[in-house]
Image (tube, rainbow over all chains, first blue to last red; front, side, top):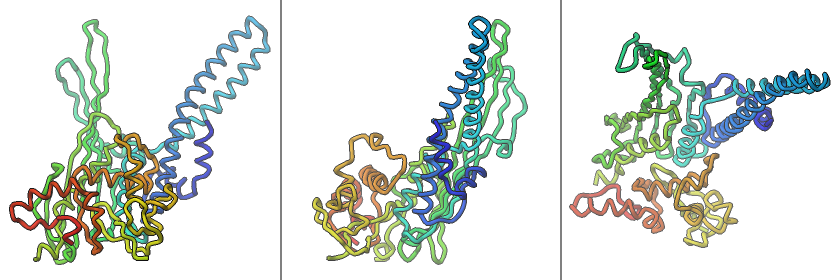
Length: 289
Length: 125
């Protein structure tokens, strides 16, 4: 159960600062970035598991306190010592739960950003750097709240309030080995709908629904020395705009992914969008010929 | 020994360029230290090692660290699913014709109409 606390102790001061601020930002080489991300993702995984265990055992210990106290009335006061020991255990476990809860970070880091950067590493030279800005905090914080609808009725629901949140959690840029400059940004737009209805028996029931729409934007600046733009091949269904400057062909792609859960986005969507841009590219020398 | 004959990259492939230190027992390509699979005790290149260890269901190969082996394995599956990467290098090797079979099969229909397919295989580079 103390595995996560041990891993927390092994994190570097910079990583602990990232955990405290819930923000992962900076310029790194791909390998250095992956090392940092792997360490934080590993801590998050063990933290989640240990937090659940600590929570369960804390509740169990609390019940033991009550049981011990009641039993002491019938079987002797020595059982109060048992209750006291269980009370101390419950407090320690609750503290561990709270400490791990404070350090909990978004699953997006391990489930989306990490595999995406691992793929991107293949297209980068070891000494090239990429800039990332990852928000590791919860998506539905007060500072991320955009708007709340006025109360309204629909169907059986007598009161519905929709609150919208915008979580711009992942952005970054990288210069790839083929001189392409890649920029990306992921924004999760979340709608939290709190609904109240009245049952035929006259009771009020509340329910909460949530919907997420992830907006993935990618801008790929392909060097004109290496690439020309050909006809669009099979597409992911993203909106695309292509423009050209003296040095680059700029392909901008935007795709929206809807989900009824707040689970992390499927990271392949991000990879598919970048490959979608590359599908439009053709080698410059051959197209000139 | 020559330069490494393995290719690096995902969206666009390029020559590795590192000096070769060994030869892959499976595909006979010269490979550098980076592209030799440590797990095969440096007898196979990363691509061949990935192919031999790859299972039918990618979810079986759950790798939460997303290391280089995972990236190579995913690249292999991604190309097999239909993505034909652009090759920006100069060192042709037939290994990738087979590696990219499905991609080339897709492109063949475009070539038939007489148009110049600039995204053709590495042999055209």
